[in-house]
Length: 509
Image (cartoon, rainbow, N blue to C red; front, top):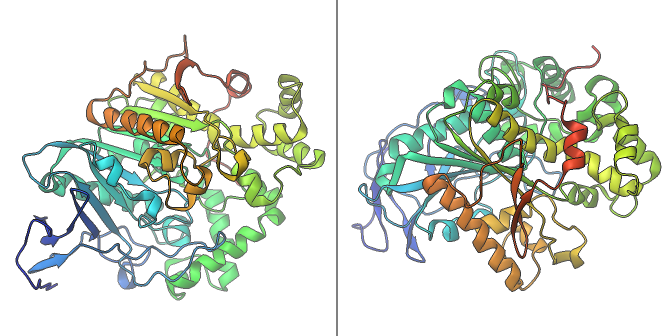
């Protein structure tokens, strides 16, 4: 690949030499920024549905001032499916000092989006505020939906996770040139990004690529191979092809997300086969295939797989309220809907009764939100901390309890609220609607505190409060003011203490 540059490098156009060639970025607010840097070859043509391949080198100077195209993805939330190219596997780098001698801590962000959506170019992921603290920040794209996570005959499982490993390998090999310390890499992500972080902790191929991990709102959904194969068969049937590499390769990448969305819309019809993922519905998740992902993150951590990796993990208080809004049931949950949710999601054969007994004053809507939040995010996040401790490691736990003032405060401390607070982008991007316009001073203060905790953890492993243990169970409660106290969701913890979050099975064939 030959790339030419029209001018010599300057202070406003910093250059960095990577293993593949020279990059020319730009300057923004005192930071050097490089966008759209390929870490692997485009996964199309002969590389479709394959493990990522290292990017080929180039001659000359490659401009790195524009984000790479997003991977094909779901349109259920109005996201455009027009990717504008197939060079999906790229990273973006913000650095205070593109100097190989700088030795700064590194943070690598994995976007969320249900393993079906996600794009590092979104304004909420601009890393200028985080990097301004003296941290090199990398954001990345990875394959999504059918391209990245469907269980396809003839293809490796968890291709989206393998993309993330490839991006971390690129960081290991190149980040020193950007001023980062490859021995002080922290991977962090929220929602499906948090689930990806949890999976990386359990993956042999990711071992040694990062020293610390921040897992925000970890979903408890990991598929068994049998369930994943059945879901993939439904995707293929929607397209009229077989769930194989040859069958799906006959369909253009841009057309696959529509098939995923079509299956998503009909998951309730498969409740007897797919169980909980048909109730929620969740058609994509990492697959516990026994090779790429040998076991669930909770089992792997309890077995000591990540005992040498520092872990910061937590969730928001009102994890499900945003989804109630999206589903059109906020303020309108019926008793029947609550009973169905309790029956499908509560742990154990008498889980529904135990929930009602444990929360005697809760309304049906409150119970509906509690059991959905506990099953999908809150208890998986807590259990990840407990598994890390059981395996001989160290974990710091948090809960975001601050009620967002945006939208008249209707969503409380909802799912995704932590994203603008972590990145400090309180007035741009979709999640900014939760903060309010203009952002309240309390939000600015809380964001600064959270950013300080995340960057301190990345720098030296201490976010500013004691590690979690099974005695005191201390957690940071992020609010105004923030406190350190016993984990507040004790009632839910007791309800779920014997649940193991196994790979979700196929219920009927």
